[in-house]
Length: 52
Image 1 (spheres, helix red, strand yellow):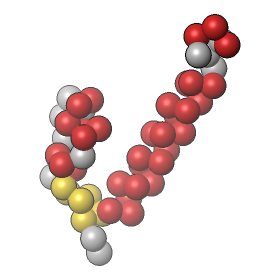
Image 2: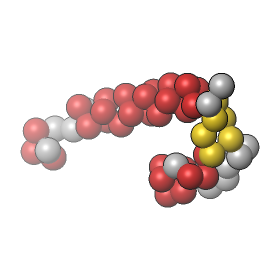
Image 3: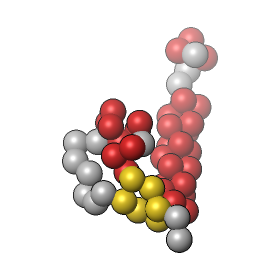
């Protein structure tokens, strides 16, 4: 199974206060990133037309 070093991900380096583990399964990382992306996209959709 492919693994990803979490500290190598830009989103972790920029916004994480702490990394709980050094590596994680690549498929799991992609699933979590997709879910996070959906949250950000939903936040953008909630803006008023004047904020866009």
